[in-house]
Length: 130
Image 1: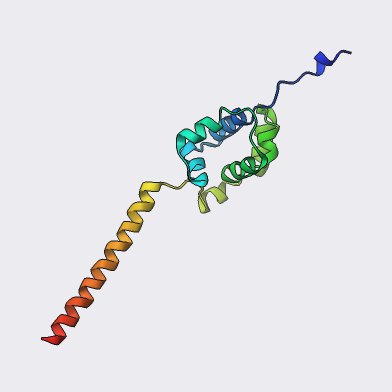
Image 2 (image 1 turned 180 degrees about the horizontal axis):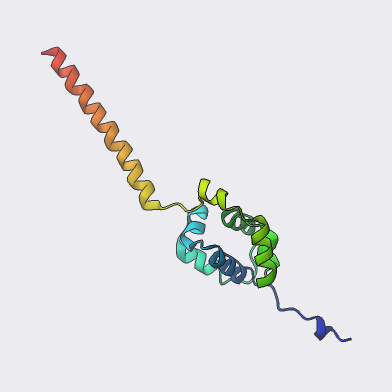
């Protein structure tokens, strides 16, 4: 037998991340939020053939899959890994997708409430001094 019979295409971590992300319905923005960088940076990462283990581990954590699923991806194996490890209830309880605008609105709401409470206290103090 010659070695060409056992040839497998080279690993492309970025393409594997993209494919798994799409299968799981996770947007690039979710990964970008975890890494605190832009969606474009995630797109660039998905074009890289090889990605370091530390980054792969963080991406796997966001996708809630084992790192091996990214490293050894093929459609059939990935479906089996996801079916055996993906927990739908975990997704409902602890979603990794963070909407930056919603978070900002929430923070602004808390700041507004604190400012209103401060104004109420100042008005009470002024009323007591009269």
